[in-house]
Amino acid sequence: MSHREPLGASSGEPVATISDPAPWNGAGSASLAEFAAQHGLRQSAARPKPLAYVKALWQRRTFIWNLASAKTAATYSGSRLGQVWQILTPLLNAGVYYLIFGLLLGQNKNIHNYPAFLITGVFVFTFTQRSLSAGARSIGNNMSLIRALHFPRATLPLAYVIMELQQLLISMGVLIVIVLITGEPPSLQWLTLFPALVLQLIFNIGISMMVARLGAFIQDVQQLLPFITRTWLYFSGVFFMIAERVDSITKHGHHWIGRIFEANPAAVFIELVRFALLETYHKDAAKYHLDHGLMWLYAVIWAVVAFVGGFWYFYRAEERYGRG
Image (cartoon, rainbow, N blue to C red):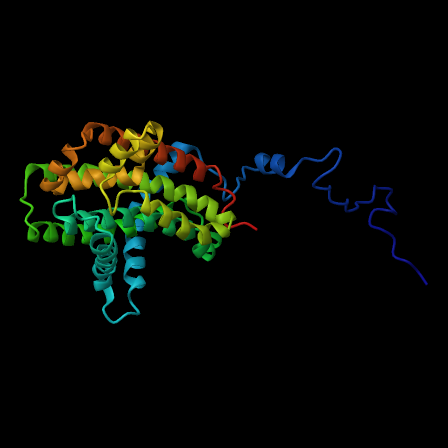
């Protein structure tokens, strides 16, 4: 039986053979990173520079707002009253707190217009409380979206905080009506409501990004947050006058504890909103020499520290979200 000779064998030419592919790793071979660099390839989910990251977020501002609006609508779509629950939920909470703290525990004795005082505290604290809870689940609840599309992951906690902001704006409309009904006169002081809420929004975005990263990798965070925020609620002057409590603590010689109460970020934002809307509260707080200017300083510091720290902490893990 004759055998076919390799091409070129009879003519004395060298035989062309297919060489084995070079290994990706090992001695004498380029690494995957070097190979990608040589051919102009880049990682699809690579973390961009901070400024480029911020620019990408700004370019998606319409998407963030629309995503928040869609989630707000979907939250109450299954209930008969629908969007009305955005108003009813904080009002019902305030009613329960008034029954317990105002009537049963007598916290309303030294505070003029206690209903408006209490509802203001509940609405403002709820904004921070819900922003924290929403931020913790913003990554875990959107894993399919994260794994399917490439976009700045900070879009998600931002959208959740904007969703809570939309609900807060409705609550503020209701609060202003309550304030007027309870006898508080409108004044130029009301204009300070806007910068107070802007600072709180900045603060909420920062802490929401912090818990978003924690919640993405530690599932227990979502279970712990309700206990943390409930404890925070009782120390934030929602039901009592923070200036009175600080004065009492300071008189007993515990100055540093008084300063902690006073600098509590949730209490700071509540105080600023009360000062903006409640003229009667000015008289109550004046008895305890509350430094209103110091409250603004605390608010600015908390907003800047939380936002910068939260953004950087979340940004550093940009490449890890959706993996595992």
